[in-house]
Amino acid sequence: MDRLGHDVLRRRLQETEKTLAEGLRVLKPGGIFIATCPVPFWDHRSGSLGLHKDEYHAWDMRKQQLTQLLRAAGFSQIHYGRFMWAPVSFLLYLYISISPKLSVSIDRLISKVLLLNWLFVNQYAVGQKPLSGI
Image (cartoon, rainbow, N blue to C red; front, side, top):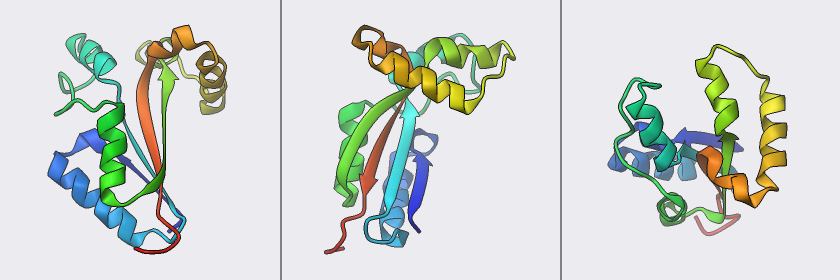
């Protein structure tokens, strides 16, 4: 496989570690693994407002923990970022649809304004399977 993705907070930590190890095993050398999860601040706010089924996810994941999970599993070239600007994500709860292309365009524009970056509700880490050695 060339690419895999995983929402790391949908499972317990031990299951996530096993999933990352399996992802590393099945990826071709140079393959990409993308792990995503909510930003804890926004996860707790949306849960307390009843915007998703669970009050909040099982455990908080911040930049350091998310990137460390990939690094510990054996991935390299780790890149971290945030996505889905809060005002855009809230539109879904108002049953207002927005195209993924427009959402990505808004994210790219907003990400250039550092003062507004705290308003991204999700985060991701991308890791690459080393070209050799695993």
